[in-house]
Image: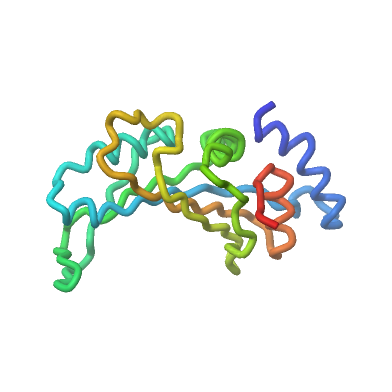
Length: 179
């Protein structure tokens, strides 16, 4: 059963009970997932072709990433206005649920010496942020094409209002928090 079906059949009723929600619309749910990959150091080392990283992020997310460009020049970082500095993808609806399902059930168990993700990464806006050091842990990435390992920042936006509700939603969805 997919995460979307699990959410509608099991997680939502449990959340309604535990959080004492009077209306179904009060139950917290996932809004979107944002994946960010910073490529500034890759570009500064002399590699002008970042299409490999763009293709890897497209394979991981299932959609084409948007290239983020530098807004202004900063000489200390050898950064010029208009240089590509990052790739970003925003996932919603079915692709979001498919990615979260894959993340929890396939990707995170593949991390070496994995002890869980931190439960302190919630912010006041209903976001949960965490970082994966190597993008090669995703099974879609062909190991032969990897020139340099890159990290991916993952932001999960929810509609929950309190930290307890956020943590309960992610825990019931199968996210392995560290003790």
